[in-house]
Image (cartoon, rainbow over the protein chains, first blue to last red):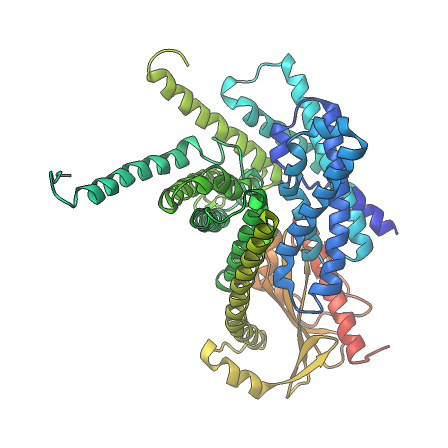
Length: 193
Length: 224
Length: 189
């Protein structure tokens, strides 16, 4: 049990899917500086990430591996993700139209968010068990949310400073992310495997 | 370049030259204006992950180029048959198939680099570049032009990745393509070998590219 | 009618892609033959026999007999009874694949060879260095093998400086595989 919580902690902090493995970067630059939208996006991503990883684990271990169909992994995974996002869209449209319109184009874009496919791929690469998959994917979702909210907050604070113009929005965000990634590395010693 | 007035051969010749000109224009646009890294900000995930070593960057960018070329050409060839509503699904199916095939080939031909690239080859599926070019260009253009567009974008991507990897490997490991070039007595700046270094390298690269672009804009006369 | 066209298109597209994938798999199977040859070559190298790839099949079957337990292949050296098998697991940045050779008493290692890794070059990547791998010869695996800062006991090996995570991962892979081998051959249980 302790192992699972360590895995959760690690996936938020020391193995942050965004800051250590560079996944889910596109929304980093495009997402508005509104913290509320960032949190909402993070929540949506976490939900999709956890459920799709679970579904993909089941499909992979109960169907693909026994039938020696591993090469279909990528295809099946992306289909699961697309389906799950579709379900989420319908759910939001029905129960929270405000959030639905706030997301706008970003909702279907969750499908191509590398972080979600990435989590499923890492789950396979590291041969995680069912419980490990749940903790890891949920933790990764949280970690991604933390990263994107933090970056949003930092970018908001940028109005008080004056970075060289040639960096542009993308360049300065990259530098900010780098500084954050550096800070998170400081946590490495905390997780003693 | 000689014209052949009054000859029945004029039209296809002219058409071919027109294609050449337009094709090259499309290619250059792909490399510079539509450059995935600094022009469109796409495909950043893999940029950050594989630029730690030049060998990795090369294999990754070539893989992406192959996938985007094949996908654009195929999409363009069947563009008359794709029902509008299932465009995205169609792209996904084609791209997934291509990526799986490329991944398998890499596993056999370059097993060590394939291991180093890990899940990032599979992540080409979610790489916005591939789908982006299909949607923005291939679906509405001829296979020939789609090929040039894809080639341009792929080349631009490769160029950006190689430049970033060149500096990251040189400063972070003191080597180029695995060959140690900086004497062992000088300790490499390990910062660039680890993830934060990827971000810094990317930010710096964007900075210098923008510097170049803005300077050339100024030289082209006056403001903006 | 439009719906029918959509479904038909997707069906045809999927079928074509399935064909392409099937073809790729056939190619992969054929090419995998070379994986086995490379594996056998590595096993022979572990026994200090450098063999060119063409002669590997003959040399290997002359020296080793095959066994299988729990989905894993075990190669038994005919003369000495040393048991060789592959093991793999997650490293820090990549999948680490190793070759383990257990002495017939199943209590110590004959040797270890790193087949594939993509850890940090110069740090974790150093587990591929011959000196590091040689340090595993004769090391005891009971109660378990340990990779530590300053190896003292008979079951301890010196870790690579600056590569603690990679060495931890390697330690896990070794111990897990050894436990499985002991279980398979019912030694000491």
